[in-house]
Amino acid sequence: MESEIVETYDKEKINNLPVEHFDGNIYIIDNEADSTKAINYLLTQPLLGFDTETRPCFQKGKSHKVALLQVATTDQCFLFRLNRMNGIPYSIKSLLEDGEILKVGLGLKDDMMNLRKREEFTPGTFIDIQNEVARIGIKDKSLQKIYANLFGKKIAKRQQLSNWETDALSVAQQQYAAIDAWACVKIYQKIEKLLTTE
Image 1 (tube, rainbow, N blue to C red):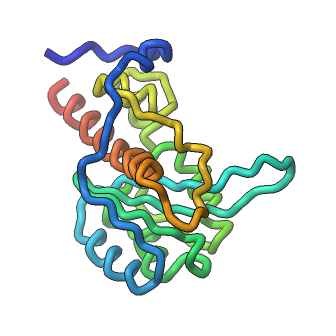
Image 2 (spheres, rainbow, N blue to C red):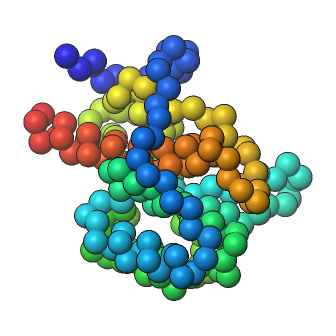
C-alpha cells in the first residue's frame, strides 16, 4: 500500500528515510567525440532527466560557469563535463534544442540561463517538474521534498557544494549528480501514472 501524498512534506521526516541510490550505469564524458556518441544514443530515448552542477563560489560578486550537465534515462546517466570542453559542443547543443524528445528537470529556468552563459541556444522541449507536481496537489518545490513525498526515500544533498571542476569526480559526486537527473524521470513518470489512474 502506497503512502498518502501530502501538499507539503515535513523536512524533519526526511532525515529518517532510507537514502536513495542509483544502481544504473554512469558514464563520464569529457570530450567532443564521446559526447557525439552519447548524444546519438540519447536522441533515441523518449524521456530524459536533466540537471546541471556548478562549482560553488564563496566570493561575493563572482561565479563559475556550469561545469557538469547530467542527462539520465530510466537506468543510465551521462555526466558531461562541460568545463573540459569549449562552450557547448554541437552534439549537446542539438539535444538541448531538440523539439521531439521530452526532457524533464527541476528549476529549469536557472539551468537554461546558466547554460546559455556558455553558449547561446534555443531550448527545445522541456518540462519543469516544479510545475507538474501542482497537478497532483504538491506545493513543495525542492527535489528532496518532492521525491520523499512520492517515493519515501531521501536524496542526500551532501555533495551539492562540492568542487564540480575537480580533476576526477568522486563516486559520491557521480551518485549525487546521477540521482538528481534520474529522479526527475521517476517523478515525471509517477505523476503521469497518478493522473492516469486518478
